[in-house]
Length: 266
Image (cartoon, rainbow, N blue to C red; front, side):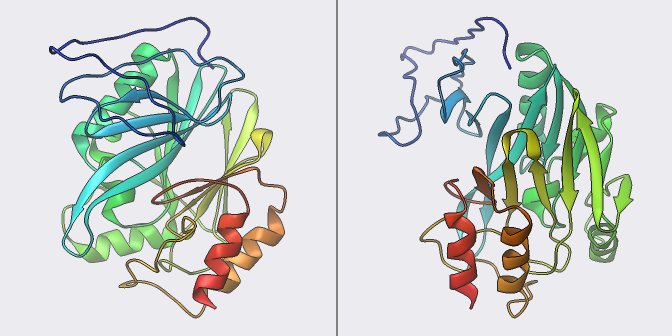
């Protein structure tokens, strides 16, 4: 949690307009960025924004970083990752979509939020999860992924960076004095998709396994559609008290996102 007011404003002839998700959005001008304090009572507010990276604060310790990936099938797509900060330590789920956005995110966390990034976890092998991994490795930040993720990245042979550390079913990390988990509960969007969970604030990062309410099925190229609803049902059963549920793309919410995803693929 940010201890004191932090403000960075670069003026390019226009005023930065603060915006809160859930109200009318106002675009930030090119090159304009701001990092501002949010009070303990403030929820779901944008604390940093440029055209390539947005950082939302959802609770005292949980943030969503959103970067953008240009795709052939779906155009420019916003890609979410989860950031957990506690006692000036941070764990990140999924890198931003490219190296430049990853650099910006790390600068904001270390220089403005005064926190040390302890680990990054890739939740599957697609570019929206590992596109910025090079920057994390250059900064000496340990990376983790399911063993299947590493195998798929090696098979692709497209020059993608490979996470350094593997796990099979469950990975336990610490952020401050609290635990944060990455877990494989079954196939869905891909055969290697894992989720992240921060029990202290009951925050669940579903990644691309979970759809925002109203979304279509999206990219099914590497999916196991038959297994998908059962995997999400297992997830819902294991974490029925989740208060924050973050999908890989689009708007976050609560357990209703799990219910919607199950119904979408049944």
